Length: 184
Image 1: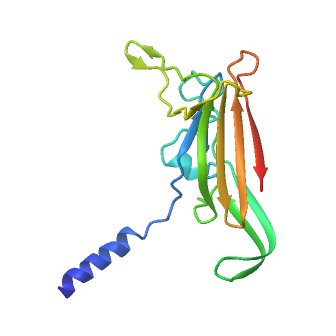
Image 2 (image 1 turned 90 degrees about the vertical axis):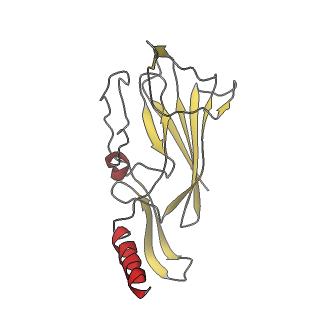
């Protein structure tokens, strides 16, 4: 009995010894000429790409391998901050990316894709033409853009961030995304 417990405990330590990585989901804004993936955690750290996700910033997105993004960061610094354990910091930075997974600093609250129109799937010879996961959660015909990703996450310093990212299909306005951040 004691021997089997020792083996199980040793395996648990060895298997759990790897570096912890944030497991934030990615959401595609994949309309128009420019496509990008946005992490629900607030920024795409390098592991997001290393772990098999596309680098994003795809332009022109119809070309395979057109991604130009790598990593982004989101940092919020505060002075004279005390954490939930009572530890006091004269200076503290809550962060995610580019090399910081951010799992201990940020937590997703809500991420949704809203579209002005129902999503369409295009097939060629029975195969789906674009295979990016971009599930429309809501249709709003009064949306000021053709598609919007709304992402809300909390930062451990007591800040809630809401990102609204707008994309268009208009031939003169389909090669960029507008990003608005609101902190409260």
